[in-house]
Image (cartoon, rainbow over all chains, first blue to last red; front, side, top):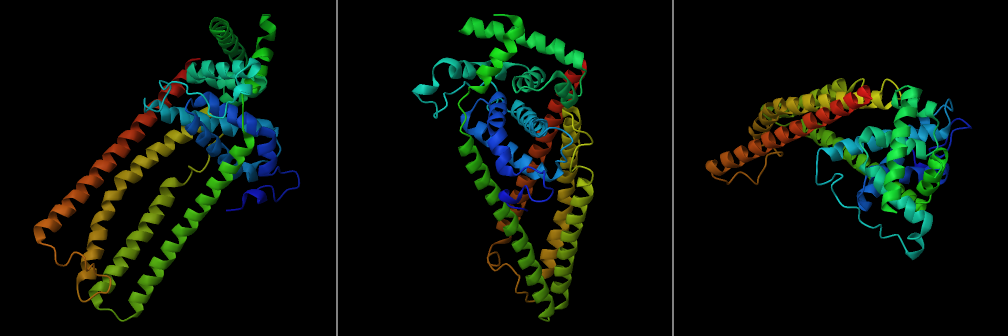
Length: 175
Length: 192
């Protein structure tokens, strides 16, 4: 097993583990937040995703964008986590959202607060809808999302439109 | 709010969530090192066990204990080979989509059930190996159990078997539930 710093050894264009964390660590953490309400398990999921990416980096050939590659793995791992959690109600969505201990006073205002509220709403969406929404929020195109989930672009558009309406409504109601 | 701007506004809020990337990186590195250490320990234990068996074999032990070692080693090799054969084709998904991944996970769950149901068949082999080692004056013989009354030994073995059976049943049930959850999610994806 290679070390974390050696993950990028090999082809010149292959990204290193550190560069993946720097560029996409936040996106990974946000995806974990969309699929796990509990802060401790959310951290664990984030670590699992990063480990899976680290193990998959040698397979990265640069055929797709690194972001797509990373989000695909993150997403697959998060869905797997959600499916496991769905078997155990004590671990699942019924658990109340606890405040993140890292959130200081500066984190509780404005856009950040709105982001946390959005994450809570996304976590309540059905799994299939949640998949679409997290990828859209991370900036993937309809084509990329369709390719990742194995559904048509038209289908992605229709379902995203429906989800957007629901989220906007909930954001407005809870504001 | 203009509906056309909804995603950009939502995406801006989404990205504003407080994230400690450095903490995530450190925790992942710690976890990876722990995994590497466990793998090394695993290999070390296997090497030590093999060396111990080899030394026992060469030390001129009696016939039946030698047969016991051979049976144990064969059972170990068979278990490893079986595990490898059952896992073949399950290392990675056929495609990159979530559907492919879910199908792979379903196949892994089915495989996990097969492996769990195979495991009890190795118990008689292990027991045979243990019995043969006890014949003669084997240095591998468990000294701890020699003074125990037979009823206690039987009760202990029965409790162990019961725990194993219960564990296997719970594990298989968990995997079957997981398969059901994956099937439901796949059906949901196909419907939409």
